[in-house]
Image (cartoon, rainbow, N blue to C red):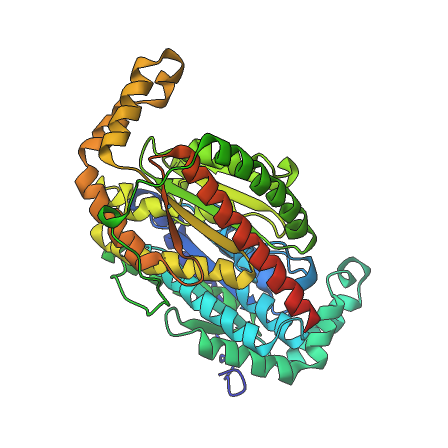
Length: 496
């Protein structure tokens, strides 16, 4: 691909300039159509050091309305300093509907450099390549146009450009040790880039551009961006079809089969609550010291007791290391991005705990039943969610998922109590009553969710909550057991 790449033949300058002017005009004219059709575009620009990535982006955006594009240059940091999953800086930088994001180097450069520096193993590299393919496919299936460009120059051209930059005081700072190392090991990098593009080009193909002549590079990039944008605008936003991957699933009972009679005495509750909370406080310190991230997910029926359950789990934790995220209906800027974006933005750093009061599972429950997404969207989401949670656990996160379960009679009694008690009336809304009328439909959706997303690495726990105190103790037991297991495994891995 790169080894045998042929350079472009020289072209008439006036003809080239005329075509660039025409393409720029077309691209500028399409910006309003992008807004109307709500088409988001992500342009990933990778390539050799000194190939002109920054200059290309500058020329691409020169005639565009700056309100509707963004330029991102993700910071590449050593593996030891990363506090979030590998994909975090890229997944959180995706554009809103109707806008364009230009990314100056991204997941390719980051991952290849880490492999060649021996900061990650070959096994981890392959795992991240799979994560990248999943990420790109999720963007495509969610209606994003993703254009991937690689700016190619040969070894001699790179040496000439680096030498020219180093010869001047005002440009020498732009050449880093990493750039010089890349040039010194040009063939090694070329092989690594070729291998990466071969492994990540099936879903969204790579476009290799001859970057030896800047005007030609600009024209070729504009041609690709304009043609693909025109096609996307005429064809409409792409909506991916559901698909099935074989995840290691844990068999789950249907909600109707769950015994909701378990209770606990007040005396036992007080005693065990203190023991579990004391232990959880100790474990939080160990989690922080060992840099283990924790994601606790709460879903359940209205009035099932999620809030009280969360309070008992959060109380013994150091507030500096825990965040409780109440998830409501998405804000406009969240609706305008792929649905997992707002959860990527809320992930905890390593060593921290994040408790989600409602989660990404809204996609296959409320969004499904209320028609906020298409049938293809929510059917596809089961696999996308399993992939997302696999990324979290491969990063090292402990993922704990609770469905807080009650029966309809208990819900009715709690609704009535809230409505008749002045200090509790804020807890009950007309929407709660409307949702109650749809209990059978929600139960079908929840059963399907539990069956399709209870994986071995992120299983569901159905918490019997007719007795709230019993439910709190059961949830605390599960959290304590999961954190103890994670700490023990971390220590075991260190010893090995």
